[in-house]
Image (tube, rainbow, N blue to C red; front, side):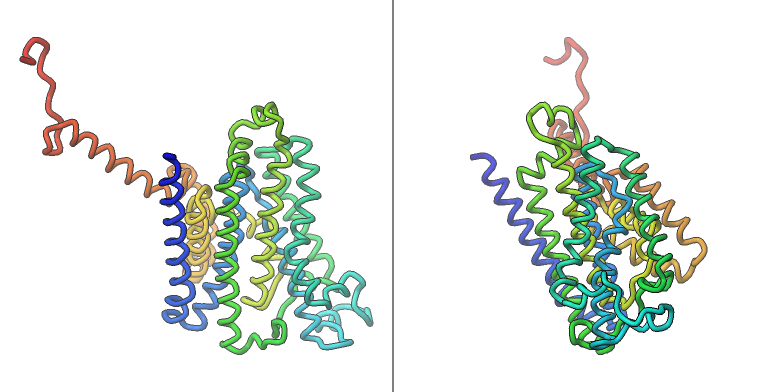
Length: 375
């Protein structure tokens, strides 16, 4: 009975938060920002979608995923491959294949992406399938902690290197560029660019809702239990590997969807956007905002992405040092991220109120009388 008011209060705050976010994303931002700035915001929201998955896997499950760039890239390339085929027209090869390749027809593994439904499904299911295969090997062998982080980072490096080496079929270092259309809509039209922004904003809110549902479900409690005491969970009859695998796969699907929507927002996908450095940047954004909080992770990802754009223009050579310093400072002094400042302020106010209640109402505690003088 005592939990009911708490659940109702939590639900009310969640609905209020979603309403405020929807108002800001769908009403305030389009009216206040120019088309260029709105396009940048769409790009930032894509990084926030990755941060939602990191919040679930790392913030709740303790899985430091330094390879989210792989899943972001898989979703991005799946979307870009279909859009390049569509831009080329029926029977034609994408422009970069005509420039760098010697083939007269599409490679066999490109052909399924001619189908828009297959391409859309692949943007999410392909990263999830790869994560399921890798996670099964990793978690069942009880690889965790720093070893898991290193393996995930090595995967990101290997994937980027492979893409660079396949210039005739993946565009190599340049990637897939100059994407003009999005399922029949011209991306050079500002109206269509705004449509892409609205799709990204709606997808972000849906992912936040999904992650929140998982976090506050029985599975979310089990995920935290695995993070805090894996052996105890195993003794209770659960398989910790399966619990961690679900979080890893869901986070991969979120990153894949983010990569897919990043392509029409920016018009390009390349190995430089999915390697080690971008993977670390995803983690930095979530850590700075607050990896255990959905709101903190999202705002942190958007803030770090904005800072990268703003500061890299002024300090192009030194921005990476600022970024690293920001990450170190956040972990050293605010392990819970910037969002934890709210809790710190509340605790200090509560302690002051407790002190006032124990005092004489003036904010100072009444000094204790020596023994024997209390009367």
